[in-house]
Amino acid sequence: MLQIRVPDMTCSGCVGAVTRAVQGVDSGASVTADLETKQVRIESAAAADTLAEAVRDAGFTVEAA
Image 1 (tube, rainbow, N blue to C red):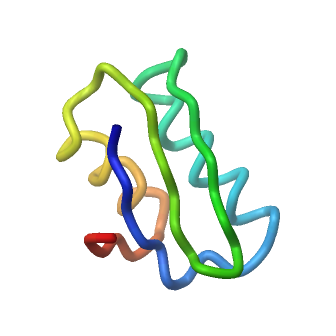
Image 2 (cartoon, rainbow, N blue to C red; image 1 turned 90 degrees about the vertical axis):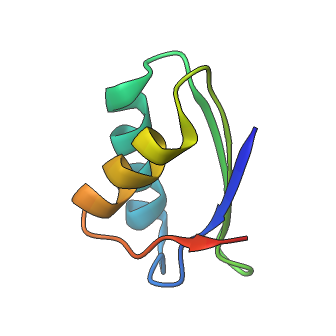
């Protein structure tokens, strides 16, 4: 499980974009996001660095949780 903070995730559209980015790497990944805390939990077999890079490529900042 990977937990990251995405400080510029501000709405449900952002959550969708983050989810699509992660699932573009691993279609079976489970993504849970909390807009209030900006925390994203990812359950995936893919490497953490690859997942974080996908979120960055979607235009978001990724920080350690």
